[in-house]
Image (cartoon, rainbow, N blue to C red; front, side, top):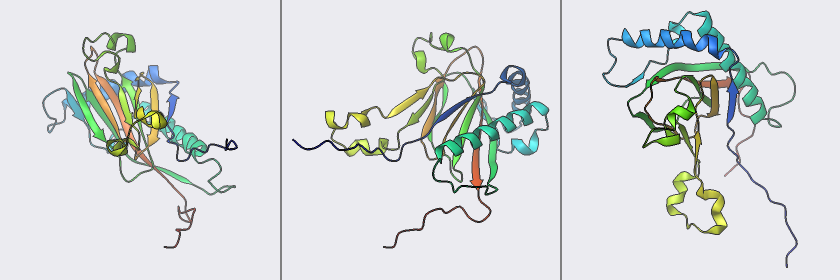
Length: 229
């Protein structure tokens, strides 16, 4: 028998959930504003799915929206600090967080947003403004608990097509994570992570705010030298 070794697990994927304390007051206003913006958008397509342009930071001047943006920025900062613990140099570096784009989506009628990733950023997120309660959504005869869920795909998912599946790599076989949306919750994830908004049918529209974020250092962002070939 061989001596026991220590298991190392590298390259984990961080994902965080934050709860907005002011959701009950802010979300009702955002629902009305977003619905009005959709109704007055001359280029809005017909049907049950709508995505706004990603310029909400420039277009919306409301205290409730600014309050949500501050909550998002604070949450991204907290999560990025946790994810990079031990990697960011010690001391103050005047890191600058910038939201590169903020938009909203409205979904119903069994529509969905297919698998995608977000570019030009390190963190992305989805904030749930409005959706039917989970118990109510789960009663859908076809979609069940997946009604309106957000599905994330493992970065190793593309490799499974060429992998031999046996008990030795059981840790690879659960390649998706389904997050049950709750109004007032913010889910943060690395922008490279593939994800999908599952089909949704409900009495209330599924309304979300999405965004992309960068965190930059004034003196440059590279912490590790590239290895020579």
